[in-house]
Amino acid sequence: MKINKKILGGVAALSAASLVLVGCSSDDGGADPEASGTDTPAESNADAIIRTNGSEPQNPLIPGNTNETGGGKIIDAIFAGLVSYDAEGAASNEVAADIVVEDPQNLTVTLQDGWTFTDGTPVTANSFVDAWNYTANLDNAYYNSYFFEDIEGFSWDEPVEAMSGLEVVDDLTFTIALNKPAADFAQRLGYSAFYPLPEAFFEDPETFGQNPIGNGQYMLAGEDAWQNDVQIELVTNPDYAGTRTPQNGGLTITFYATQDAAYADLLGGNVDVIDGIPDSALAVYEEELGDRAVNQPAAIFQSFTIPERLEHFGMDEEGQLRRQAMSLAINREEITDVIFQGTRTPASDFTSPVVDGWTDSLEGADVLSYDAELAADLWAQADEINPWTGTFQLAYNADGGHQAWVDATVNSIRSTLGIEAEGYPYATFAELREDVTTDVIESAFRTGWQADYPGLYNFLGPLYATNAGSNDGDYSNPEFDALLEEGISTEDGPTRNDLLQQAQEILLQDLPAIPLWYSNVNGGYSEAVSNVVFGWNSVPIYYEITKN
Image (cartoon, rainbow, N blue to C red; front, side, top):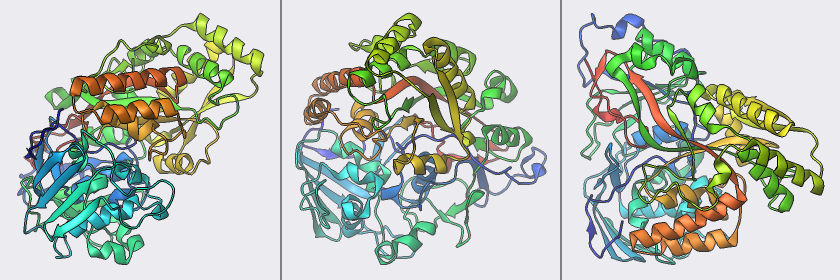
């Protein structure tokens, strides 16, 4: 989208909640089955608690340090940003009264008056500027620091306490100066990395992360609302000042151990809405749920990543031959048909078909096709450089419903390349992500992306740019970085997309991650609730849900 010199008043097509993907997780749910049965009198929606599925957050609940969907689902419920997004991804101002784009490098933000955090303190320009500076400061090592690298004064070389590109004009106004043109910067400002923080955060970040103070539609139900590995209880925020007024009394997000447990609870009336269906039910859930089944396209990309540091998989000739062989050895068509019952589509790039500018005609995309003969030949060429030894492992979180496709993928690799290959399960998503983000993991591992906003750049920059916060494989290619920078600096949409597609063609040569498939969101809801809508990014619009 071309950003002209005008006010961004809610016309950009965006979406929230990018984040590294996770399946469902945890406990058995626990509510009385009769409590949501159709024979029970309807609760007052002002008091009705919507029960849904989730996963234990990887980290304390701080927006700048949350880049996975378990924590992101909670963060998005308890904080509000400058703009918010509807089910189709259209943006409208929320805390912002307006965002004026003076030119591609300079913006002025004016806040609405009257917003407060749940501790009663006001939401001011400093609430945003101080939060952004803290997240961007390398001393704090926050995962979302990458989202601020376009702001003047940001540094990858040394800690910066206050970026020169952020200036507070008064309590309700601040300006943003970028270090280079970023044509979509205004579109990013609804993502959770850009949420405000109250003064209480800076006094004690550790305590805050366990019992966060937000300004959104919901808030924690009390000091013990977050029961680790069990659930988190949210209630409505009576002082919420936005337009997305909850039509219910709160959310209880249960951390299920398996998707099968969550689906069983849905059928039993113990949970109201879930956003994942286990492999075991994909063939029957639409028949079992009827018009309460959800199966719609979403901006979700699935892959697995092979870190460059692993022996045999560097970005040298041997490593690239092995990466290409791995990709060619995977029968994506068969796996998506048999395991996912057609609810996934084999990938032909690194982005998503629901995003403007997507194409299935990139040069080099044939490396994503199944070709057993070519795969074996490339692997043999790599063996001539340095013979393969050992077992190829693909790590995944067992609480996310991934075992079936991982087993099918390693079986395809094993039979095609004639090597030992196996899945390596972690009990929880949090445990997997901890090893990934600390570079402890010594195997390939499942990865994926759920978009922040519908733009090609969002699937590329955060995952593969040098030093990017979600660059799990530590990939770095100056030619790719240069095309990214040129593309995002270009105001003309088609030209920008063309440059970003050229950058993808470099990824298809290097394969820092192995693209697998695009996902639909598959979910469902019980007879106890109405007004259930899933957003384009696969997340239910919780505030609209009512109890019958």
